[in-house]
Image (cartoon, rainbow, N blue to C red; front, side):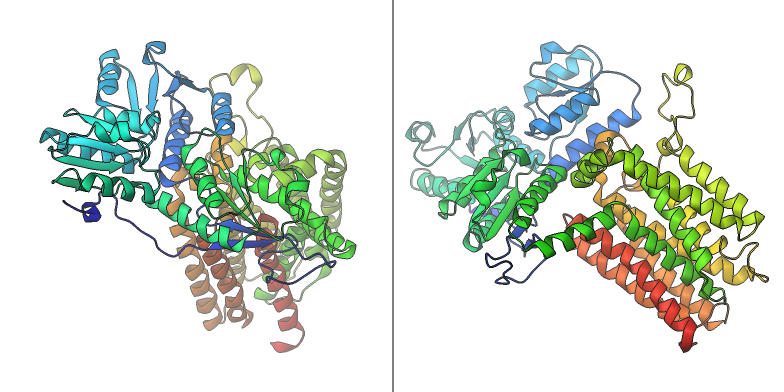
Length: 623
């Protein structure tokens, strides 16, 4: 008998901990109590959400829809087992068929579960364009079965008889095969020829314990067994992490479609540890009474659950947990959230960046240019967010979308008032400054406006500036950099050094580019769904992370070189702290992409506020 060392998908039980989110702030220490009842702590599994195969399949379909002409795109069977995601795909014109007889033209996408060779022949015979989104791990299992079937070996698949992955795998077992759903299934076990060479594999989302049990039963009957532990690494890590969460939590919430086999197994694993467990598809299913008394709640999600559904569950739990907190603490947390959601905090960061750029150019910090920059940043982001609140934001940050829907008229008035005030104040700085700012305000308003008329845009993908692929991040960086580095000095300061202005501009643009691209990385799933082509979508997550990783050392070298050659004052060296702060936040993102979004954004924009404080300290007594 050959052991599981022949694994086609080697086990990997590497370190994976839970993210801790307290309902008032991220990562509060366990045991710290508020209002006598104790703060509700939310522990979010690091493995929660899309696995590699599901993410790959969804990305392939959405990228195909984005690039292809308006031809029918259908998936053979549900792309993933998540009803809400499937509804969104339908809204993008991507439909699902259950039979190949239903489609005779267009593009057919093979879902992540894969299909049998016989079904592939039908697709080829129809002359259809076929996009194979089969998970690479499933493809490896298919290859294992095909290899042993060619040798005449009987195949045993440990898995669910009716699961689409298993049905596809059985098509490769041309020398005979059987599906064993559990160790007590005597009929399936008796169907295994006792004297044959066996190839034993597992459905990629099965439980390792079940595979081991079946192998033990077969080893006493068959002399020559080739066992492949084909359970996906992601599945193993999820189940192992759920076990740890169950031991540390008062309640487990599993988020995911009820038709998802791997999600149901997570529920089963949690219940096996006698921890109360709730399986929900959406946040609306959570009853406050069911979670109010829980002090520690573990949250995990199936491999086909998108990030925005997990965030909605976290937001709902946080809302319930906040009701247990003392009134002053609730008001403080709410005030902080509103400051971040409405870009008041970002505006303060813009003011800090303006102060920094002034000092980098050898000028004193003045309140007027700082105020103009703050008003411009506030109005630019606020008005654009209002226009886009029904777009990707409703998936990426549902709490923010709900807030903007409730207070849209008030926020719109604030945005236009701040734009008007910025223009009026800039007129005191000079005609050139005022005209430049006015042009920037107009450009900002045109960003989301439909430039191409309705009657000529029928077959055009680009209707406004925001539809230009990858335009958001560089335009935001350019807007902040001009407002912070150019406006405060052009036509306002008696002398301008082009060398120091260039360094200040590059510093501001690079730091804001990093800020915005990081936000795009966090929002990539929602942006894909609505068809928004941000930089991470255009060049990919890996390349975007590489770009951000290179950008920070480049900024550091710019500051050191400019300070060493006296192009900028010694403040440039102080600002290395801000570069390192962004580096630390990048590490946090790499370890846990499902961060507390408002706090994470607050920390990023707070880095610009911190830069402003450093600049003030330097300018008044340390240079």
